[in-house]
Every structure is written in C-alpha cells, then in structure tokens.
Image 1: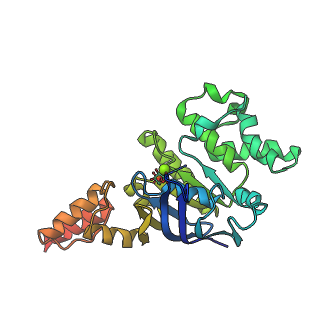
Image 2: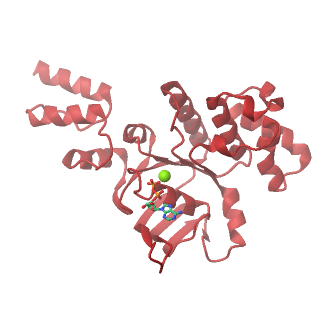
Image 3: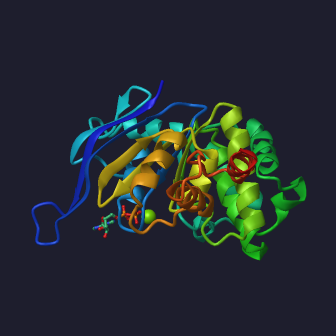
Length: 280
Ligand SMILES: Nc1ncnc2c1ncn2[C@@H]1O[C@H](COP(=O)(O)OP(=O)(O)O)[C@@H](O)[C@H]1O
Ligand SMILES: [Mg+2]
C-alpha cells in the first residue's frame, strides 16, 4: 500500500495575525521500494510536508493517507503511522540522549514493545545497515565523530524496521564521502523494499537517485514526475533558489548553439552525445 498525499494544505497559526499558509494544495505519492525526493529552496514547505508523513502535523485541509490510514482522523492511529514511517530530522545527532549506542538504538523497538530477547539482534542489524561494527554498541554516542553520530541516529530509526523512511536534509553538513555512503545505504534499503522519501535542496542528488521528484516552490507543487520529466522542465525554466546541475546547464548551452544532445544530468550520456555530434 502507498503513501498518498492529496491537495494538502497546511496553515500555521490559522486565524491569528501570524497565519502562514506553508502548503497550498500539494499532491504526491510513494510506495515501498521507491525513492521519492522532495526538493525546493528554504521555506518552500519541505519540512512541513515531511512532518505530515508521520503524523507530527495534521492537514489543515486535504488528505495524507499512510497505507490506508488517514492522518488526523483518529489520533490513536497515529501510533501505528509512526511505526510505519520513520522520520529522521535535520541534524538528527542533536537528538541523541542515551548513555550508550546500544540503548540509543534499542529505544525505539523497546518503545514499540519488541520483546527484550529480540532487542540485541535488532541493534546488531541496525548497526550493520549503517556500516558500524558491534564494538560501537558499548560506546557513548557523545564521544563519536559527527558522521558516526549521524549513523547512530539513523540506526535508531532503522531498528524499528519502518516501511518508509522520511529523511529531512540527511546529507546536510556531510562531506562528499559521507554523502556517498549515506546514499549507498538508502539505495540498499530501497532495494530491500523500504520506501525512501528524501527531502533535499540538492537537485543533482535527487536526479541521480530518485524514481520520482516533487519540486516545491512557495508551498505549491511546481513539478512532479520522473527525473527525466523534471530535467526537461528545468531546461525550459530554472527553479528559483536551486542550483542547476552543471551537466544540465552545459547540455542546455550546447543545444542553444545547435548541438543535438539530450537534456541530461549524466556526464557520461552527455559526453557520448557530444562525441557523436563531432563525428557527424
Ligand atoms: N512551526 C512553525 N510555525 C510557523 N511557521 C512555520 C513553522 N514551520 C515552518 N513555518 C513556515 O512555513 C513555511 C515553510 O517552512 P518549511 O516547511 O520549514 O520549509 P522548508 O523545509 O522547505 O525550508 C515557511 O514560511 C516557514 O517560515
Ligand atoms: Mg526544512
């Protein structure tokens, strides 16, 4: 079953002078085993949308349905939704609080009533997924490096075995190796059937990994579709506040001067097309 968002409107502080319409009728969907990216620049509504997906926020209007359960209709159902959808905030390492990595990662499954006998294997599995060895479990989360802390924070959500993982700017502050490792982990999870909903302002990363991309601008869905569709649209008009991937920009300029090249964000594809043009 999928995640379905239909005409979602979210108004903060409705009816007060501070009223802000953060989402203005947004629709999208995602299924397990799919990677969906939500891109847009600061203030476009990405985090507001992400928080609806695990019922931290409820719609002002419109619908958010998680595997058949509608957010906001019965708050008792929100517990179930939070088990299905793991939310990883921006800088999740700021929320670590336990004395050991083991306790940190065990917290979620314990909270959901996983029998104590199964907890060690849940912790081992989650550590393995994020690429940390068993020796980490006895250590204090506060003595780890930044990258290790982030992995522990992600492991503490994975140990609940969510069907969907929503990550809000998960690569913020990581170097390019850290980024690559995180994307490889998410790809592995996707292949094993987890739905990935990835909030980012890195358009290039979104194009590289996503099955579908939602582009938000000022709380509205500007574009929704496959990377191929998004990139076609991008060539027609830029997106305010988003960096155009250099390869896309180059393809656009080459087309302007008469080269017959596809609109692509893949350097290899563009290079081959240029070669063909030159051979003609
Ligand atoms: N808790 C909040 N209370 C009031 N306004 C908020 C709150 N969170 C976000 N907003 C406003 O909603 C809009 C969308 O914000 P947000 O969803 O955080 O966007 P993004 O994650 O894309 O930067 C912005 O105008 C922001 O100021
Ligand atoms: Mg945000």
